[in-house]
Amino acid sequence: MLNVKDLHTFYGKIEALKGISVEVNEGEIVTLIGANGAGKSTTLKTVSGQIAPRNGSIEFLGQQIAGMPSHQVTAKRVIQVPEGRRIFAQMTVRENLEMGAFLRTDKEEIAADLERVLELFPRLSERLAQKGGTLSGGEQQMLAIARGMMARPQLLMLDEPSMGLAPVIVEVIFETIKKLNKDGTTILLVEQNAAMALQVAHRGYVLETGSVALQGTGQELLRNERVRKTYLGEL
Amino acid sequence: MSVELGIIAQQFVNGLTLGGMYALLALGYTLVYGILLMINFAHAEMFMFGAYVGLFTLQGLSRIEFFTSSGPALLLLYLLTFLIAMVATGILGVIIERFAYRPLRHAPRLAPLISAIGVSLFLQNAALLWISSRSLPFPVLFEVRTFRIGGASISSMQILIITVTILLMLVLDTFISRTRLGKSMRATSQDRETAGLMGIDINRVIALTFFIGPALGGAAGIFSGMYYGNIKYNMGFIPGIKAFTAAVVGGIGNLRGAMLGGFLIGLLESLAAAYISTGYKDVIAFVILIIVLIFKPGGLLGESVAEKV
Image (cartoon, rainbow over all chains, first blue to last red; front, side):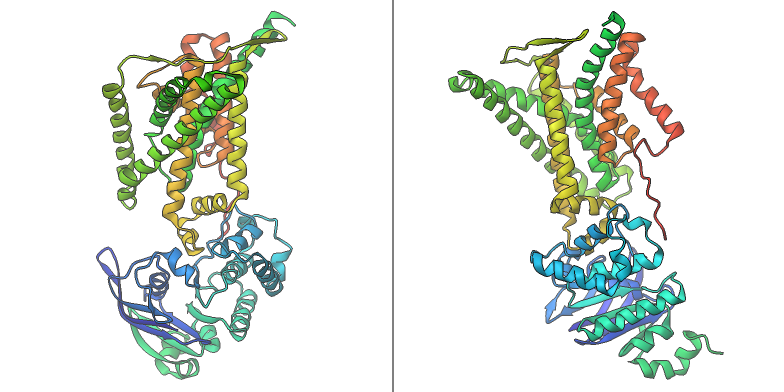
């Protein structure tokens, strides 16, 4: 479905991605793990069009999307839920969800999807009229994912959804990710919480300083000694 | 009613008229700042440009006999004048953004600011060179009547200016808060990158912003021409500074703040002209600015919702 080949992205003169290749097949959960600065978020941002790559190809369903501005990538229903939630703080929860469906015109289907995401996150339905900025961190993450779902993503890219959240909430978020995937959404997940990510993912890539260091199924990587030592904190 | 109250009422009416113009102009500063975090110093020239286009349109159309033949036709003439001048000024705003600001989008913040000052100087001098260095009379084609309410007199011109100003504000407010395009502007002003992820074409939103702001500023320019009876190439300078002050007083980036700030400065300026001295009236806006910034640095209606991390 998504085929990233030999991607090079620069921040000024700094080469953040040094030729990354990642593949996501339909129906999968694929995770990118790695330390700070390994290039996980940069990979997502390059795919979603927030940063243009210098070299390399990004194919989505056979179409080249490398270098497209983000609103055009979104139109292909490749949806990124950004790091740090990035809720529209001055807009109500309902308006935030409406923004997620910005490019859609099928009113009835949008209403149905709204019902669906509120079922997924019942806490949001109590807060529809509240401003986004007044929600707790966990609620904001739920809203960010729900907002992404409102676009009916073919590929949902989540950037650090567990960051800064209490363990109980992290559980909820990961349960939701599994459920969304079971309902048919393909997911590309960037996480620092490697243990959780590898448990839910079908396949994973370990990134180190802008390159893919290791790849395999979630279980393979969980058993890999280097992964256990470096990312799962085993001695 | 006593004479004293009469003066207050009179200055209140004058202040509302003046404040309406400041507020319309202030909206342009605040809209652009909200989206690009940039002060568009060329915005004052939109006031001037709108007034000139308004004058020429009015002169041109009034040669057609039909437009001056009856009351309704005259109304149509003024509607057309405003429409043409606002659209023309809006288009000028879009062109300025496209060529003077967009190439500097990723430059340090000072660069577009300097570019804006350049555009401002260019437009003023273009008007000076190609139109006139002297002030041109701005004709009024309808009979201005004066009504006495209590101790104050209010002219039909003032009623017109205040009404149309409030109408334009209501339209803008509804547009921003209810429509899809308006919501895309709000989203872009809150978080440009994330707005892009929602599928919003940021460049289109920015262009739209640079249409709406100058269009409103252009309307304010025509009001100024109608109210004072003449226009000049540098007529935007003082109102521009005061409108910018109004935007900051209200909380820059906040639309209702700009409206509030504009009316507040207009009112207090008029009262000061009556009670302190007309010589000091231009100082009032800045005194208000200093006082507001001391007690509420974000402006009267500035950001109040705390963002949680």
